[in-house]
Image 1 (cartoon, rainbow, N blue to C red):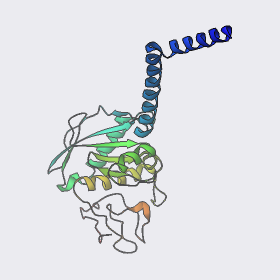
Image 2: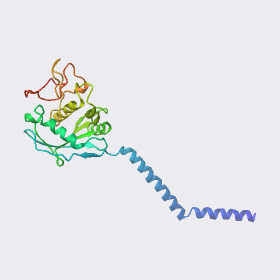
Image 3: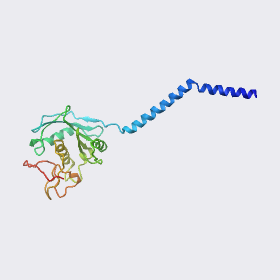
Image 4: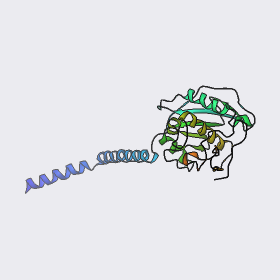
Length: 232
């Protein structure tokens, strides 16, 4: 019995040592590490994907057109293979065309590389959706949008064009810029087709169908007439 008692006492002593202050501190530390790790993992899931990186075009130019000064910069999502400088030059040429907004007193548009009034971003479909969703707009991986910071262009539309547009993707880019800049200068409402065979207004959502109109990428015709239509 004495041997049993001794063994019982030894077990109790060891157990007591393991439950001492040092052991409790170690246990508390381990629990704290686990909790911090779990919180970090949960926070990472709640934050979602990291914001996309963009390359800003270094190109710049003189103001084009008359009216309110409107300085803009162009950014392209990093890793798309698209040159930000080349895209900026193309956008600059679109806005300088006599059929675009600048030639008709809708603004003196100037390409800059900093201190802009608004930004034109060309982004992958997933990034475009995220940026547009922040404004309450659902673009379904297909559409462009206008935000409080400027214009978001879906890379797919920029490179592939639209199945409803009769012309190459390079021509469809004219429509993208003219339509979204139209929103930027205050034309919030979309227009509808004015009649079969007429050129579609640039502020019509032509990607959703032409309703009998002809595809058109410019707000004005070569005679300087504004190509309008009823409100959609």
